[in-house]
Length: 307
Ligand SMILES: [Cu+2]
Image (cartoon, rainbow, N blue to C red):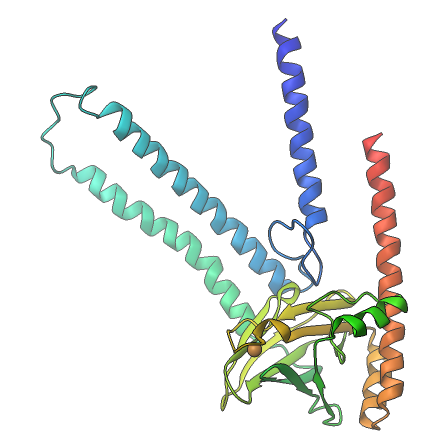
């Protein structure tokens, strides 16, 4: 009888856990946010993976401490209120307790500090660059330059709705507030150094899936680096309040095969913007097609596992 009562509960709990686990995978976008997303965007660089691991670890500690404090509070409220404990203890010091609440937090901080410094060192240890990119924040767009690939430059401006519609009609996804006219193009599995500055006020060059977030400060250069392990388009947004169109200067990075990057940079160098655009639209169509195929596969898997 007992088993009959508890079995549906455990099945329901299991189903809920499975749904949550499945949902969190489905919810996290790669390169862009997704509806009802929980947690971070999917990482495509080692640094972004480390950031998420570190975030998860610290989150566990935070939640444990919060629960612990909550339990202590509950004990105080229920066990030591005036009715339950009319004659309070006069104790004012407890050496053992005081040593414990000093030493234990120190240990917790050390546990956090070690991976934190490891991550910082990883972020600021620059492997040899394959491609250098200069990003300049302007009110309200980004200018990009490729100093070691012929020095060509271009400006990247957010698309309006009719421009997006034109792309979508061609079969190229163009998410609202993220799609731009000229995407940054970089090769997959190669180290890209991004040198960041600004021409007017402070902006911030951010791509969550790369784990890159660095201030763009006028008169100064800051830097970040990434090595994307996956092809596709990865979006970010200016992350430093920079004026009225702060929300409308997205960052779009298209990660392509090295040979596609070579073709594109050649076309850009010879000022053949039209050819460059064609190369990128072709890559974008391929990425969109590949994505659809993967989603269909995952969808099919889901159906099969539900049966
Ligand atoms: Cu900005």
